[in-house]
Amino acid sequence: MRTVRIASGVGFYGDSFWPAIEIIKEKQADYVCFEDLAELTLAILAKDRAKNPETGYTKDLIPSLRAGWKLAMDAGIKIITNAGGLNPASAGAAAAKLAKELGITPKIAVISGDSIFDRLETDELFPHSETGSPLPASIRKDALFANAYLGARPIVEALSRGADLVITGRVADAALFLAPLAYEFGWDFDDLDRIAQGTVVGHILECSSQATGGNHGRDWESIVGLENIGFPIAEVNERGDAIITKLANSGGRVDEFTIKEQLLYEIHNPFAYQTPDVVMDISTTSVRQVGVNQVSVTSTSGHNKPDRYKAIIGYPSGWMGQGILGYSWPDAYKKAQKTAAIITDQLKIFEDKVESIRIEHLGLDSLHAEMAASPEVLADLPEVYLRIAIRTQERSVAEMVSRMMVPLALAGPPTASGLLGFDRSRALIGLWPTLVERGPIDENVSIDIFEVAK
Amino acid sequence: MRLIDLAFSRSSDKGNHCDLSLIAYDQEKYQVLVEKLTKEALSDYFSPLGPSAIDLFRLDNLSALKIVLYDVLDGGAANSIKADTQGKSLSGALLRMEI
Image (cartoon, rainbow over all chains, first blue to last red; front, side):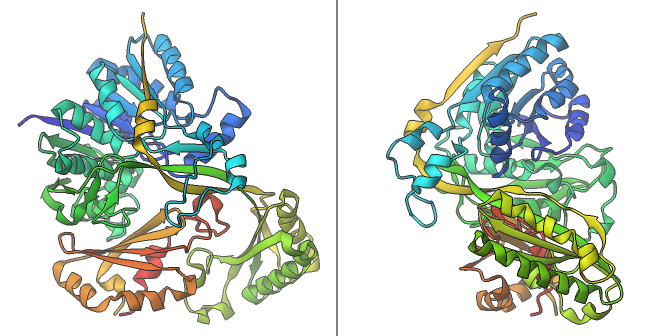
């Protein structure tokens, strides 16, 4: 039976692309898919675009193409990426310019139409997908971006038109990987089990090294070669049955447990995981080790094709101000508590402009917070870092937190040291999830092909 | 015994909710999890975080449980003032739970 090999390019904006370049060099994939867009990535790209309308795509796109695109073109490997972010058209133009420089003649497909930003000016309600409440006027007015999650079909069309590189905006993560499988095997999008199985393969690959031993909870110390970790590669047949593996000379591990862990990642309801192409059920999925660093994944079920797409509207949600200050033994914890009490008291001058205050101690309870370990260790801590963070709508108030902590080096409890992390302020961004009818979105999707000539 | 003796875990966010996987080391340990780890016990254990609801799903085919804690991330990733904005460390808190 014919198989197609798809590989992970990156798992998020900021990930290393070098493991993918190794896969391209060794010609161990037919498609490499770069997944760049987490829920909050569009917020980062919105800030870039506000400064310069020619930006809004990831800054890693061009460097990663510079490193691997010519090799990929020579080997006939196609690249699919949602790094276009909020501006796939400019990303496509930048890629075309790079192609000339590299002396290659690719067909570049740019897929756009995921933005619903213009529709915020209409009287559409955009009800919250969990609470059902209509989009408040304040969010509508101040929104930073509004994008629907597209599925795999526009990418399938781009590939059928001969694209060597497909650049998209907000396409659902797993759909980037489903698309080349559906294209190569001619899958019908009404064949729900097959579409679900292809989506599962994408889900396992979309977070790169999280499938190959990175961020792995079981016996983590026994995983060797994290400094040279390999990204996952799936060898998939026309039924959608996949063997997940990685390059033989790379670090990390692919076993039953690393694959189960990524399969279950962020899936919420495993009986009904919503994607743009199918509602997926992994309660039938089989995960089996079949060799060294080889795991078979088969038998996922698909229930129905959603009639609506998920969309996210991002909006400014105030400011965070924070300061971090260290104290040493003796009485490290008590000193930190005292400083927290002083700052909390001083913040009262801002009255209700301070919406919330968090007091955390790095190394003690900053991560597990209210769930942190029992306090018997507190009396004799060698040192502790106090973190105070506030939420407010006023940037000037946010900036006062660290400003207020600085004088306590002299005016507060003894041994204040290590004046680290005095952020002035950080913009907070809220996300409003909603569901939109797929019809108008699909009609608005455009696929533009650019042929780069010598 | 603690959950870490039976299983490993990874957690992350979706919006303001924390999504945790609990994957048993083997079939026998999975059976113990299924018998002992109830939604009520989870609800008590995680009450300091004040979740608005908890989901617990059983996946016999993977010897794994899926747990969702609703509204525990202070607004979620880009909107949270917690140090752990995405609940990535709550897997560790779960594994410390006694059953």
